[in-house]
Image 1 (cartoon, rainbow, N blue to C red):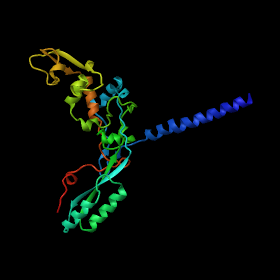
Image 2 (cartoon, helix red, strand yellow):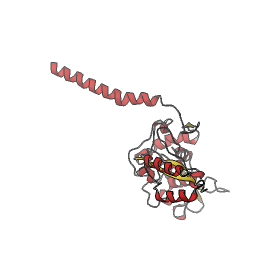
Image 3 (cartoon, helix red, strand yellow):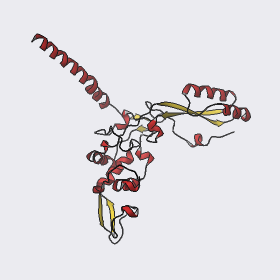
Length: 271
């Protein structure tokens, strides 16, 4: 009996400590999370969702979208691109040096060494920081997801399965509401091999009135309704698309740095 009580107390202490560390501690930490600022900027991130985007999270949850999609981009590391912006007054020597160096997708230490060599000859460079990893290579995001990305999500829809692609930055890579609506109604009309079921219950098929609705979907013939009818999204469909468009996660943060592309780095000067 005495040993049983000791075991009970020990188990209680272990379970209590585990709950405090992994549940209560995380809740307290994230519960005090505040807006942060974009790296090298005074812009605040994230912004509170409004309108359809705010209601769309509930539609996303109600339709169990998180059962097949994640909202958490992962990365495995960082790399650097060293971009020549000016060859200075010694363009031939700088160009010859650049031709011998590896400047794309290299570790930070190698990037710093290459930059030092080029600047020593009078050239000017920019070093771009890039996130790397499978999700990044697939185009699902430009950096890994962090706590700040979910500040205004309740509940957070992280998901754990990827029957479909990650959606953490769907608002960046597919910023077209009409295409998203079409995909909801008839996924295979946008992605022929899509495994996603059609969400036709979020739309209304109705006779065309005196004039077609400006919201009517422009569907391929094989997915279109019968002649004289049109497919119009219900408010829930528009709200869901509004939420999807709000999923961007495309700004550099202190805990998730990267260098945004700019015209200067895309088309560097050569003299």
